[in-house]
Image 1: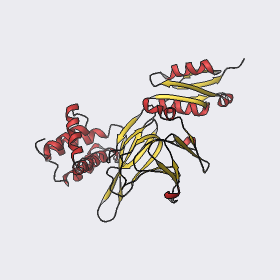
Image 2 (image 1 turned 90 degrees about the vertical axis):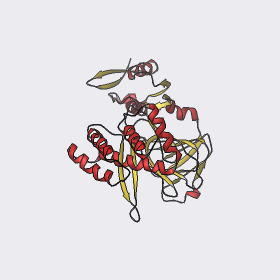
Image 3 (image 1 turned 90 degrees about the horizontal axis):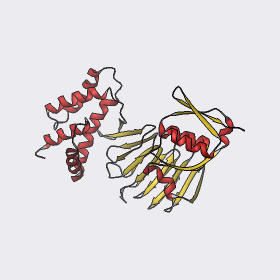
Image 4 (image 1 turned 45 degrees about the vertical axis):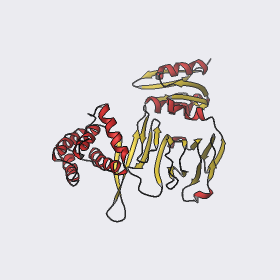
Length: 328
């Protein structure tokens, strides 16, 4: 790139989704060259994203909020402001999976946090500023700082995610999930903690993690070894051997069930396919199901397979699916 203005133009095109694959590759290479480049990118992105989440009733107000912040950054040229103005207006009409909020820090510094949300029926991934890669399952939410400044790298999870943590022994990576903290230096692990399940499951793939209740001494936490799974429920932590492939198959877009209760099964199908399923017969809740699917089946194909091994039937009406028990 010739100068900073070229980089700024490229950042804008990446944010308004007009950049080519070649331009995105060039931008990634520039970001990876230095921490300063990475910080500049996230600072610009913070301002850009903030325009999408502000609670403003009009396009004019959206731009008026964004414009002063961009002008305060001397590296942003005037022509770029005009491009950003158009994008800020467009963002009001688009559902954003990112949101930004500021937490006051000591002095004049502010730490920007990103809320990354994956809706039902989708899966996504995000790369954090330290190089950590996080894959998120449907109906999940990850809150993290746009840049890690503190000694510890803290994130908060709701739902399910697979973490490939960038190793940094000086800055432990901590996942806060419900009442539990998962603390690592560099490893791969899966965490499942949907609120409706009333349990937190942590499966270690590689490396080492410790688990402790929030507010307790992490040095006295439970240490997991690769291939182990910890389940926290009703205030108790239990550790056992895990079927890692089974627990992490969702990252390959597979659906695995093993003696899964119908309540849990239906909840997962609703999340994965973004559908509304209603159980009409209470006896169905006493059933369980074991099976494997790839994510290329439709919800109807999945239900047809379930019908082959369990005495249920289904029908669709007004965008809802109704499940009933088949009796002799």
